[in-house]
Image 1 (cartoon, rainbow, N blue to C red):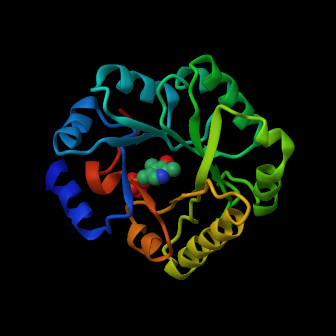
Image 2: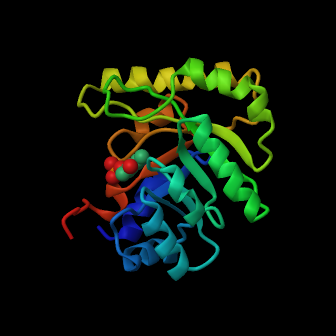
Length: 220
Ligand SMILES: *Cc1c(COP(=O)(O)O)cnc(C)c1O
């Protein structure tokens, strides 16, 4: 199926309140333009330089989401245009995003990445750390960032029971933290292999790559 058909197929199966982020990492601009011409306006990338290059080349009504791990020294390359940063996992990073956003007189929306997987390889904060961060005075002083939700990545496994538990954990964490932070609106969870399950567990934003653009080749 074509990129347009894949997009239509996915959109026809997800509820209206769920936002689809088209994960276009490693894919050429021509593929992204195919999705763009089919109506897609939100793209997710996991490398800042690649996202900045694509942003420069493509139409300006696109929303760019940084979904990968963010190095503090590279925040400056996306501060002018990025719309949502999914993988914020420390106060230090938040502070740097705030500093760079201020230079452009912007407020950058961010999601706190919560560690929901058992694997050690996955980034993310503990619920405790996230909770303390959101209630701290130093956080309330950051005027050029806004934490608008949470993001989680489930364990890479075929065991869907486990994935379900991890999604539910993020959903419950969201409800707990929203009690004292009404700005929280977005639950970013679910990828090509598990987005239906994620939606059933409360996801409001899915990050789908290979089901739209086909398998990625990292060797090119
Ligand atoms: C690559 C990536 C995705 C998309 O993965 P697919 O399985 O291709 O849908 C989603 N989220 C993050 C954080 C990613 O890095």
